Structure formats: structure tokens, C-alpha cells
Length: 250
View 1 (tube, rainbow, N blue to C red):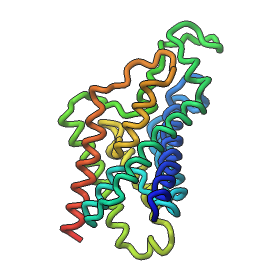
View 2: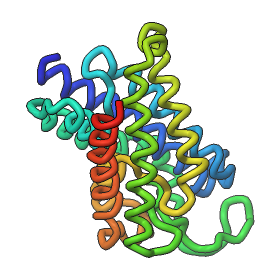
View 3: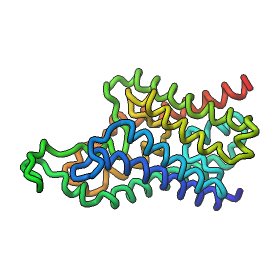
View 4: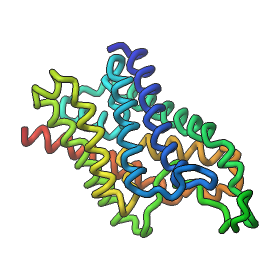
């Protein structure tokens, strides 16, 4: 794969991933969305389908890694680092692009994020809907050590199976590896996402957080930079550990 193909594939695939993921979070969170308050299960499946669509789209160009933790895990296992920077750059650009696209889809809902008063349906609003959680992760309990451990373990639960799937001949031949990974992401969200919102992908969290910081969203509040290192460091550590474990055990 050429550097150009890798970059374009990762930009497009990661943008689709974030469009679906931030989109489902916006759908569940924002006022005047038909899916408002539909719950965590909907969010988990929305992110899983984002992985499915993004990875299958990017696969012919870049292999559809879409996640620096996956890229680092593969590099640690194989020892091939020469194209890592291309993957990481494409993933970050794609994540930011996807966040902007999700914002544009829900532009009217973001603009209706009023502070107080009665909505168009006569119901009282209860203050501005927080918007950072649409773009990036926020821990339920702000405990940096616990949050870091959660992200490391959850990322190992993603990257180690992805590496092992490569040994499963039938998955590769049938083309269903990406489908299985999508369901894996759903499972991680349902089982391990409660404490931190399961970033498990540095680009997925950092790119949209940067976009949130400059988008003209009414009443958007803070972009949570004090926490931002956790969903970057945790997945990177988890990805590297996955590569080491896989290399030693398989």
C-alpha cells in the first residue's frame, strides 16, 4: 500500500466511524432529536456500525485500521514502523473531519441548545444539554488512575482479539473479520464502557475534542482538556501491551 492510499483510506474510514459515533451520541443527547434519550445500547450499536462502515470502506486502500491503538499494536507485534506515521496522521484528520460532519448533520439541534425557558412544544427546558460527551469521552467518576486502567484494559480487549483474528483463516477468507470486530466494539461498549465511555481509540477522542473546542456551539461548555490525556495514553498503552502479549503468546 502506498502512503497516499493509506492516508486517504484512513481519513475516509475514520471520518465515517466518527460520523456514525458522534452522530448517534448527538441523536441520543440533543433536544429535538427523534432519538433523544434512547439509551446506552443504541449508542453502543451506533459506534459498532460506525466501525463496520468505516473499516469496510477503508479496507481496500489502507486495511481499515482507523485507530492508533490498533496501528501501534500491529507495529509492536511485527516490528514494522515505517508507515505508522501515515496511519496516525490519516486517523487524526479523519476523526476531525467526521466530527465536523456530525455537527453539520445536527446543526439545528446544536443551535437549539438553549439555556432555559420553554421549548417549541411548550415543555420546560432544563438548561443546556452538555455537548462534549457527543464528541469525546467523559468519565463518570473523575479518578485518573482508575480511568487509565479502564482504558488500558478495554483497549487490550479490542486490540488483542483483532490481532488474533488474523490467525483465524476462515474469517479472512470469508471477509467477515470486520463484521466480527464491529460486534466486538459493541460488546466492549456494553460491558466495559460504563466507567469512562470507552474511548479505546486516541484519534476518536482527541480529534473530536479539538473540533469541539472551536465549533460555534451555543452553551457548549468546557472541552475537558484536564482529562484529555487519559483517553490518549490509555489506549496507546493498551495497544502496545496487546502487541507484546500477542507476540509472546501466539
